[in-house]
Length: 323
Image 1 (cartoon, rainbow, N blue to C red):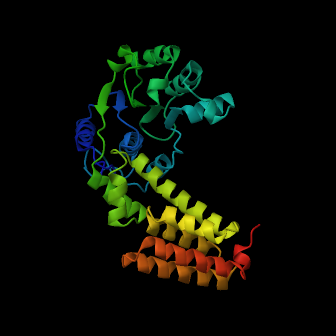
Image 2 (tube, rainbow, N blue to C red):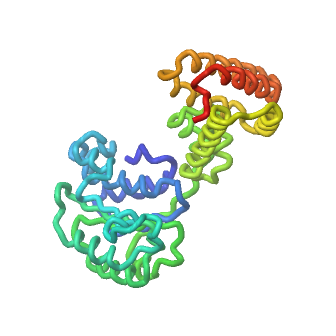
Image 3 (cartoon, rainbow, N blue to C red):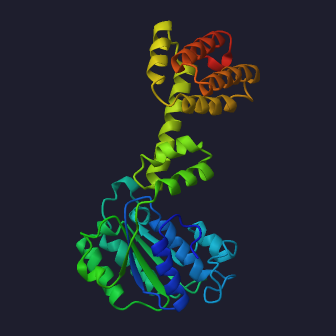
């Protein structure tokens, strides 16, 4: 069970044992830093208990991932999977998501408790995932406590939080707390290579910086991609003189140059349909530069030549005309 969850073997063993025994607590607190699998584990838990193909009492295979219940839960579309979070609160209050700073009593009382009192729509088990649980107001926590004191059958409430200091002890005492550990560097680097097709060296570099969080690792990837896009737009749309090109080359040569090249190649490919001849020439320049970098040719020299080549191409190509 829980084969899709990265790391967290102790927690997976605990949950699998409870599922097999049929002795499942009605409330949990999933505690730990962001990006270590808390919400993903909660959703996988809901899939296992509601899978209509694999019987969790007869198999260790977990959820099938293909039945209607599994598919709906995976897409967050199942009527018996409820997220009590800032997004739901913003929808209820017709407000911007950015304005949500705490989980208010209306969200618990008027949404969650109303749904708790109803029968399951399509599945056997109803799940309520409260996140971030530490942002509940005192009134919200007191309202939730009433539900935890008299939990309905086949209803599981999972509070997701980074810290438990602000969660009242009355709630903590009525839920099983599971502590999610930071993920190992090897686990994260393997994930990045498989999911994002990163090279082993780049995956290891990001894994060493993200402090055990997949979320932080993927943000680092996005930052690299954003920087590459910004560079491409600068070269494409701005008329840089020789000194500006040399200064840009000098500053970039200290960083991950191949990552910049890869990002620019991805952008150039997008322009292929509109400007095939220019895009092909650009890709040739970029590919040649990448090959030289892999041969450990001086990065600044490679960038100098690349930027001057692109500047020359820009003089005759509509692809590079500033708009």
